Length: 71
Image: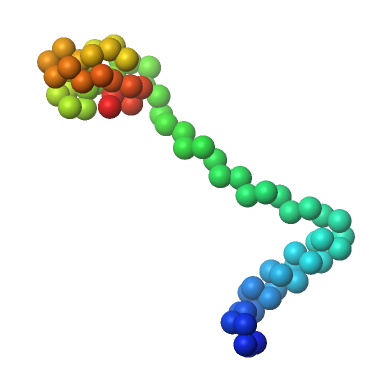
C-alpha cells in the first residue's frame, strides 16, 4: 500500500480509466435520473384534512392549496 492511501480497487480503476483513455474511449457522464412521481389521474386528496378539491384549487374545509401530489 502506498503512502497516498490508494487501495487495490482504486489503483485498478485508475489503470482501467487510463487504458480506456489511451484507446480513445471517452467515459460516459454519470446520469442521475430525475425522480419520477407516480401521477394519480384521479383528483388529489388534501393531505391536511382529507378533502378532495381540484388540483391547484383551495381545499374547502382547510383552505389549503393543492399541487399534483396533494400537498
